[in-house]
Length: 177
Image 1 (cartoon, one colour):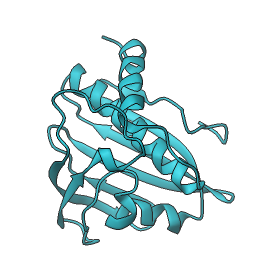
Image 2 (cartoon, rainbow, N blue to C red):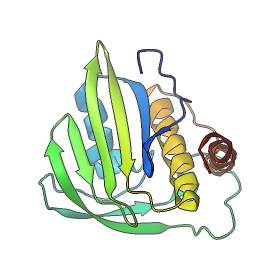
Image 3 (cartoon, helix red, strand yellow):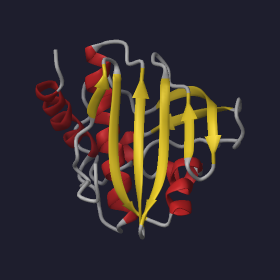
């Protein structure tokens, strides 16, 4: 993709079970790196949790999606107020690459590349085991990255849960069955 990447750009399957989403974000690169690695900044768009910046280090992400936007929208049945996940850093090249384990899949990689005064973030989620999980994480990553993009630009993001539900339906139409 090019500089025409927008905040609402949909993810694509690069192979079965692998989702890639790109966002062009306002830089500099160190700013975006901090939004990925600093738990206090990451909680504004994804999940809280401290990360020791070394390969092999374990961490815990804590999601509180109701706190990401005001209002949060209607939380779907089956989702709690909080979700936790243990992970581990598998690759680290500050401020260009962070790869982590992700429950029930082969992991997630964040890659950052400067593009003038902006930064191209490429997220790749590998080994997604089934279509239901694919639809949930596609909509989730899309919405979480949209929130980060809006926050980096000083705006107010759309209600998380309402947008997530719409995106999940969109991905159901876009991704092969």
